[in-house]
Length: 108
Image 1 (tube, helix red, strand yellow):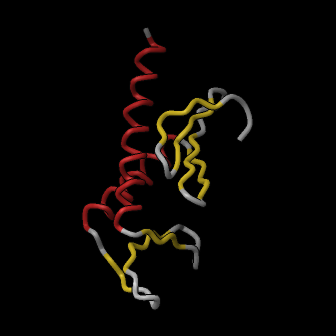
Image 2 (cartoon, rainbow, N blue to C red; image 1 turned 45 degrees about the horizontal axis):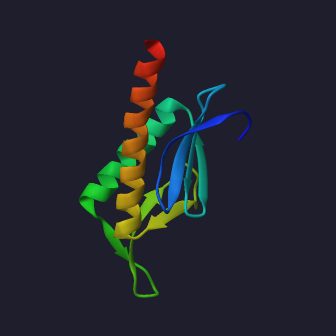
C-alpha cells in the first residue's frame, strides 16, 4: 500500500480504503488484505452480496457452519460465518456509496 490512502469506510472488523494516486482499493477484513481495481472490487462485492443473501452454509468438521467464497486460485477459498459475510457485504456496500460521494464532490 504505497501513497496516500483515504478511508472510505470502516468498522470493528475491517476497513476499505482507496489510494489517491492510482485508485487501487484496499479491503482489510479480519486477517485478509485484498487489493482491487474498481471493476474487481465491484465484482467481488456482487459475489459477496449474493452469498450473504443466499446464506449457503456448509458444515465444517468442528461443528460450525460457514459460507465458502471461492477464489480464482485452485485450493484457495475463504470461509465466513453468517455474521462475518453480512459485515463484509455491508462494509463493501458502504465503501461503494462513499466512493460515489467522493467522486461527486471532486467533480464539482
